[in-house]
Image 1 (cartoon, rainbow, N blue to C red):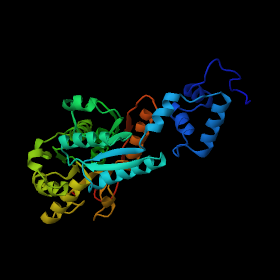
Image 2: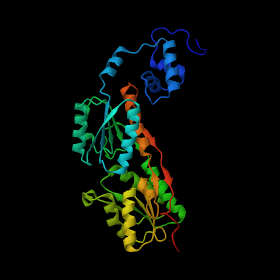
Image 3: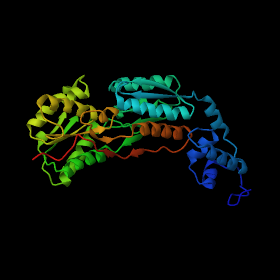
Image 4: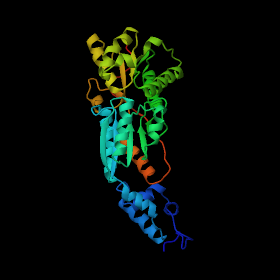
Length: 349
């Protein structure tokens, strides 16, 4: 018997006992005992050896529940064509695959009722857990959600009035603050914001980060410089179309830089600038949000706030697995990184 480990335990050892002795988390022990590929081979072997030494006997009920699992997870996306959600899906797929789970995918098209119906359909198909990206569900769906007997994890929820599930989120306010502070540091004083009203929660956070950065720099905010396109005005338009149609008004307002809600809005803003003969970044600087693959291939390449989309999908699977294994739920908040490219520069004289 190794030194430092208990020589004798009164009664049956638990996962908590093994975790404490091994210096790892409860979820790491549970996954190691279930041969999860998310845990390294060396750690799995070390945990198993310690469990055997401590006389650990798996709970019969837990074993029974494990046997009843379907080995599937349901993923609800707002769109199957949006490159942002494609990367989130890839992160979910990779981590779910390592945990031995297959994935069902469906799109809600930003419709809360359809989103709820998909969740109910997944539940009827006996998935082990459900991950919802950019959820629009509010507390008005509480009664229907209460009937869902599997873990639900949200990724970047968009509803202001959330039903209160565990979530993986990105610090959107901090990301917006980074973007605008970058423009302030370059010397810009007339900085605009181009937002989307059909993403209420995330738009509010990004607008707040924009406003805070301006206030921190003691810059005035002209209401005409902050344009949030109403949901009714957006309709079925693509984000790029919204950016292209809204950007001319900001240029007319005299801004020298614009922080855009996301990269696709920034693409539209860039197209509008080209159409109006406003050179980027010589006459106006543009910053996006997300760091989609297309951002680096634009001309000029787009300065943007990077969201770790693969990590978001992977983290959501991790939270779901913890819940499936009886661990306490947790929320995950990921930090932003500003990617500086050629679409931003000091304002011209």
